[in-house]
Image (cartoon, rainbow, N blue to C red; front, side):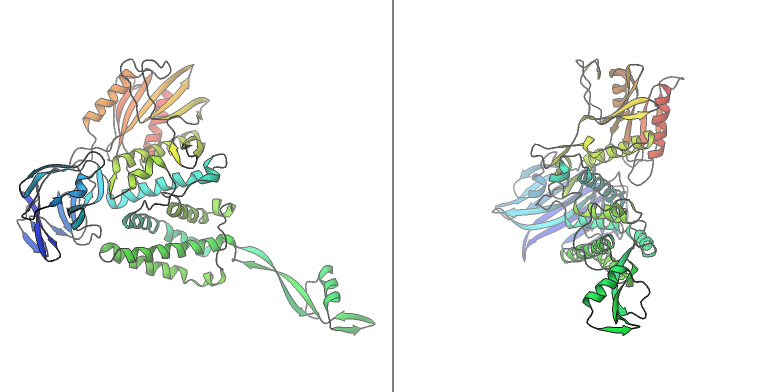
Length: 553
C-alpha cells in the first residue's frame, strides 16, 4: 500500500505550494491524519524510531519529525502557482551523488528521491531571489546500523583514535596539532557524543568508582601552636622560632619560644588530577546548557534536561567542596594517563575537545553539513578495529605516527596508505596495509590482470614469501535482511584469484551473519563475510580466524 505525505508550504501567511512524497510499503493501516501543514496517509505516528517502514512520523524525534530511510526510492513532487521560485534547493546542491532526480514542468517539479548511504538531516526548501522562504526538515535514517546507538559509537571511537596522535612524542603533530576554527559539529552530533559519554556504563559508572577511589596525596601543612602541645618539632622549625619569635619565656635558665610552627602531613584530594575531573564535569554541564539553548523542544531537549539534573547531582557531591578550580590541564600526569577512572575521564575529555576539532583531513569533510557519508565513516572505523585486532594477536601497540602522516601544512593529518609499522607473530613479520594497490608491474604486490586495491591487507612474511589476507568494508546488506550481498563475495573471488599468494578475502559489513566459503577440503584458501557492527563485539571471532589462517601457512 502507498504511503503519502503532503506538506503545505507557507511564506508567513501566504500559501506557496505543496510537497508530496510517496512510497510503496508493506505497512497498511489506511489511516488519514492531518496536523498543522502536513497530511499523512498510511503513515504511522510513532514515539520511537524504526527502520522497517519507509516513512514514519516520530513525535519524539527532535532532529526532524518526518523520517525517511536510506536506499529507499521515493516519488517526490512540488506544485505551485507562485512565479520566480526554486524548490529543492538543498537537495540539488549535494556535492556528489545527488539523491534527487528531478524534472521541472510548468508550475510543477516531479522526480525521485533516493539517499545512498547518507544519513542525517536535510530539507525540503524553497528559495526566491536567492533567499530561503520555506524550509521543512526531514531525517534520513540508516537501515543497516542502529543509528541512535552505532553512529555515536563510531564517532566516539574515531575521536579516540584521532586524539591519540596528540600524545605521540615522536610525531610531528605532537607540538603542532591544529584546532580548526570552523564549527564541524552540529548540535545534534554534539548531543550524540554526549549521549555516548553519559551512558550508564560509561561516565556515570566512572563517577561512581571515583567517588570511592579518589586519588589523594600527602600535603605538608604548617600550623602555629603553643610549644607545650607541639608533638612534631624539627631543628629548623625550632631555630626559626627563636629567630622570629617576639615572645620568649624563661625556663630553667634558658629562653624558650612561646609558640612554634609545627609541620603535619595531611591526606588531601585537592590535587591537579581531581581539579581536572571537576573541571570536566563542569565542561559537560556547560555543553548541556549550550545545547538546551539551541534545541528548544522535543526528545533531545527533555533528555538534556535529565542530563543536567544528573550532572547537578554529581557536582553537588560534598567532596567537590574540597577541590579547588583548575589552573592548568595536567596532560602529562601519569595518574590521568594510567590510573583507572582518571584515564577514562581524560579519554572523554579528548573525545569532546580534540576528536573532531583536530584537522583530520580525510575524515572531517565527512561530518560537514547535515548529510553524513556513513559508508566512508564505516570504512575508517573498520580499519581501526583491524588495527586493534592485530594488536591483540601480536601483543604489541601501534604508534599513531605509523597510522597518520602530516599534511603539507605540517599541522593537519591524513591516514597513511600502504605499509604501517610491522607486527611480529611467532617470529613471522606481519604488515597491515591500508588501501594498498596490487598491479602487474609490482613483483611484491602483484595482480596478474587489472590493478586492484583492497581496503585492508594483512601481509604475512614466511619462508621468503608474502601471503595475503584481504578485507573490504562493505556498508551494504540485502534490504530487510541482516545478511551480506552476494556481489560483494564475487569481489572477494576477484582478490583471491587475481592477487598472487592470497589465502583469503573477506568482507566486513554491519550485520550479524559470518560465512566462510572454503575452496577445498584443506580449508587453506577461502572467501567469506564477517559481521562487524559498532558495539557488538565480533572482534574476537575475526581475530581467532586470522590466527587460524596464519597458522595454516
